[in-house]
Amino acid sequence: MKMLINVPETVVDDALRGIAVAHPELVVDVGSRVVVRRDAPVAGKVGLVSGGGSGHEPLHCGFVGVGMLDAACPGEVFTSPVPDQMVRAAAAVDSGAGVLFLVKNYTGDVLNFQMAAELAEDEGVRVESVLVNDDVAVTDSLHTAGRRGTGATLFVEKIAGAAAEEGASLDRVAELARRVVESSRSFGVALGACTTPAKGSPMFDLPAGELELGVGIHGEPGRERRPMMTAREIADYAVDAVLADLNPRQPVLVLVNGMGGTPLLELYGFGAEVHRVLGERGVPVARTLVGNYVTSLDMAGCSVTLCQADEELLRLWDAPVQTPGLRWGR
Image (cartoon, rainbow, N blue to C red):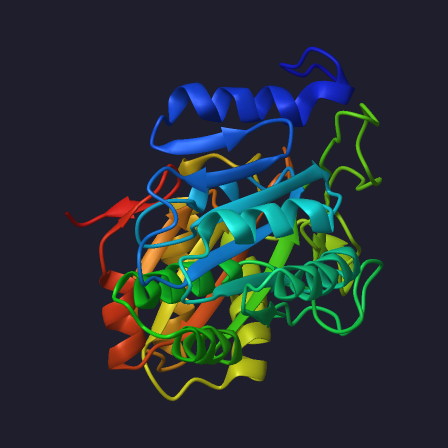
């Protein structure tokens, strides 16, 4: 496989150096692998910290900035960051109002963020943690006990980030983050496997003419493999899988997310099919976001995330945000 890299061992550090030159509004500590908004800590503001394995860009480093995360901790490709990174990030963003850890439900992330919270509290930083576990495809996977954390992470980081920007307390920001998790569900589909720099070849075998329904963002197996389906058929399957679990009673936020290797031309067409299904099922749509946000390196495929949003969550979603990967308002 051809990749635009130097050597696999430096891929993450090279990317962090690139983030630093492209986004001077961020402070990028390549050695410690911590990315922080330049004005942190913001007086009186709850600090939001997230992180995880690299390869899911723009998640998480691309969501650091005004109205979203205060810091992100990137690990090696598809590998959890270590507690020391998280402790440094917490110290860098703590203004005295406390720090909220937003954690995707993968075993390494959960254990390391838990250890980091204990270490940070030993240093006098009050920490709360919220677990994101939105994937309805499988109950347990190769990397999790329980549901995987996937596309809803974007909704959680954006809405909790807006509340923190407004000056909400740590308890309030954590409560809103948990409400978003409870209100969100996701389902992913792979049309082709992703390739990690270290392996240099596809992570799994997906024969021509087949797709994987319910795939995880690290290439974990999903519910089943089927012969290739049309965008219309995939939308019917994915949306119905989400609705069967979510059963929304309010308008929904819709994320049509690319896995990294699918052109926007296809994603927009798929987004139209998602809207069609929701309309046929009587589910009103409040907002729609289409693009590559929670990716899996170069995987061909997509995911659908729905979040039922009341007026408060919708207001916080619409609030201004200025990050490398998501920006509107102001």
